[in-house]
Each structure stands twice: as C-alpha cells, then as structure tokens.
Amino acid sequence: MLNRDKPWDKQLGQVNVVVPIKYTSMMDKYSSHDFGAYQIDSYGNILTASESYHPELLVAGQRLAKLNRRTIDNLKNYLPEEAIERFVTMKPEVFQKLTSLLHEAFKDPLNHKTEIYLILRDGFGIGITDVTKIIANLPSIGSEILVYLQEYDKIIKDAQKASLEWDRKNLDLKNPNNLHNRIKSAGSYAERILLRTELLYAAVQLADAEIEQKVSETEKMITTAEGSVKVSVELSRNTISALGWALSASEIESLMTDLTFEHLWDSGIAETDKSNLKNYKEKMSGFSKSMIQCAQKLVEVDAEGATEIFGSLT
Image (cartoon, rainbow, N blue to C red; front, side, top):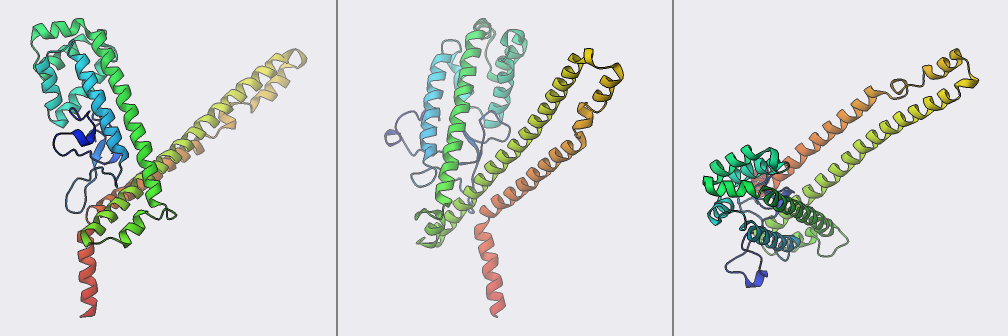
C-alpha cells in the first residue's frame, strides 16, 4: 500500500487488495498483510477485493496508502531515506518484530533510548551519526508514529465494520443478489466453487464477530454486577455506621454480619461463568477453523462426494 495512493483506475499495473479472514494490523503476530491474514480458496489463490467482493476494502486500501505516504514524507525530516527504504521493503516477519519493539519503546521514548538505538542500528542498519540525530528527534518521531498507529487502527476498524455489513447484506435471503442465489445461477463449476468459498468466509466472519461481541458483553455484565455489589455493600455499611448513635454496638454488629461482599457475591459462580464463556469461545473458534479448512478444500470435498455417489451406483 506504499505507492497506491492514487485512484485505482490511474494505478500503474494491477492493484490487488487482500481480503483478510480476521482484521489485524501489520504489527500483530498473526497478520500477513495490511488488514490481516489471507483468505485462500481451494486452489491456493489469495482472495482479493473487487467491485463484487468486499469493495469496501478498495476504499480502505487507498486510505492506508495515503496515510503511509504522508507518514513517510514526514519521517524523512528525521530519518535517512535508505533507512526508510529498508523499513518498507523488509520481510513481513522482520517488519512485525521490529515495529512491535519500536511501538513499545516509543510509548516512553526518553526512557528507552538504548533500546531504540539498538533497534535502529541492528534492525535498520543506521549509522551512529544518523542514530544520534534520530535520538535527538525522538519526541517528534514518537509522536508521528503514534499518530500513524492510531489512524491505522481506525482504518482497520472502519474496514472491519464495513466488511461485516457486506457479509450481512450478501447472506441476507431477502437480498435477491445474495450469495446463495448467485451460487445457484453460477455459469461454471469454478465460479460456483469461488462463490461457495466467499459464502463460507462471510459466514465465518459474521459468526466470529457476533461471538466476540456476545462474550465481551457478558464478561462486561459480570464485571459491572460485581462492581455494583461492592458499591452497594460499601454504601450500606456506611449508612449503618452513620446511624450508630441510635444503635447499640451489638445491633450494629448484627446488621453488618452478613453485609459483606464475600457473603453477597458468589465468586465461585462468577469464575465458573467466566470459564464457561472462555470454553464456549474456544469451541466456536475451533468450529470457525473447521469452516475455513472447508472453504480451502471445497474442490477436494466435492471430488470425494462424487466418488462416494458413483461408488454407490456401481
């Protein structure tokens, strides 16, 4: 996305924006592209965005290209161009490792000068003179990188939201152009396989997003309820203490005996609920992985099914 900031119809060569399985950034461990890990079809091809398949990513790709261009132009004020060139052309796994280290260091750059120096020297091959200049400009560089990461994160979240909307629309049976209908009217076997692959990925994306949301909401409800009980207990005990002038010591003690957080909140049940949520999430994650494997082996599954059918007829 570094040189793709012009309108798509004015680009030099063919432009491909990869459609991810899950949305992550280049700095994340399991990311393999600008927006996340690849979607792959039964033939091993990487699925890319088009006017008919996740077109919202074409918009997101151009937004990211413009952000990359602006950030690189700004960093040229502080970094030698050969370092920037090495930065943007290095292997993805090396890029992820170094950017993750820099990301952490730049959260507090003035107290991590040594770490930043070693990353720049060993990771980017920058000489001592340029490193000294960079160290002197750490606040400005750190600010530029943090702004980049914030905007990049927003682009990813916007793209994910738009992609889920595309999934819902194209799985909606009320939509005459939904993926189910397109599969039925496909003109060739290859087109039908591709559309079935797209349908499976859309279903997986939606299911993962909804499960993540429901689990997060339930965990939040448990945490909120726990906090409410603590506050209620504290307020009630303070009220009883304030009325102490009208009550004897034994009466106050009697009222407060059962008025404790430990008595009113069953931590064991709460932990069981959290554990069940975790297990449910892991189980559904396993189901999603099976769906992805199915999407990547539709041709193989079809061939096995055909063999079984013909075998039963002989």
